[in-house]
Length: 269
Image (tube, rainbow, N blue to C red; front, side, top):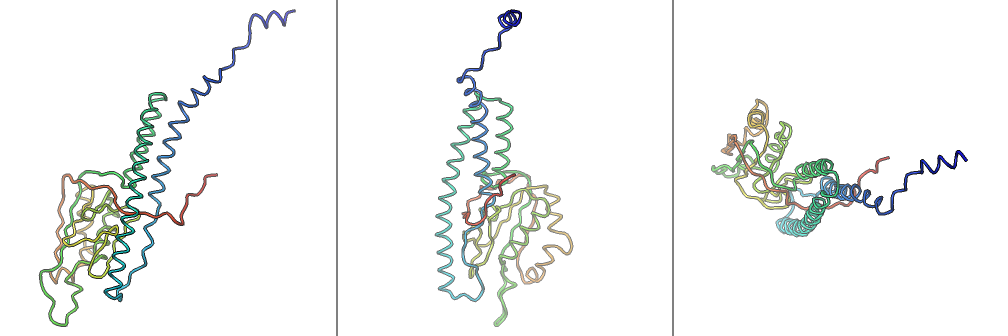
């Protein structure tokens, strides 16, 4: 009798309804799931490798070089369309995440959106602005003597790549060559007389913009034994190099192609 009376006095709390449980799970799981999809897409873009264009060597004939340029540009256009589609899907997912933010914890949503913004910047998928340095490289106005190798009178892909590497090492946070954003899959290479960045043909002068601490970046480029020293012979033959600090510059988003064929994320255990 005592047990029965106590049971009547202190009944068990009612179980949560199926509707309430589903609502709570929806409020948390859905936005977190959407954010995971967004970060997954960005990670995929970050680790994708550049399209598998045949490796170029110096002794290709003019016809071979022309075919390679056409192939690279065709692939670039196709993969740029693919990248645009991914960006559209990403934007839709971000908008959906913003809408569901009203139903979930606002602090959690803010943290997730901050992570998405960081991933966007690291992948180069959005324009950025800030202080930094501008490096201008241009071919020599001098003409090689008859029979002289014109190599030291021109700016080459290796020269641009050397500057880019030095700027990354000095702490640059974003870099662009002319209008091409340098990302994880960016290639800088020579195809015949043409320098291509992200499979886009560029012409001199080559404008390398890097966002970071202007004084630190400039010091790194001008240090003795550094990148300018490696160009000493070219500079002596008239190749023009100008380095200047900028209080603010705007770098465009990455527009190159990417092809994810072999690499895949390692599942966490």
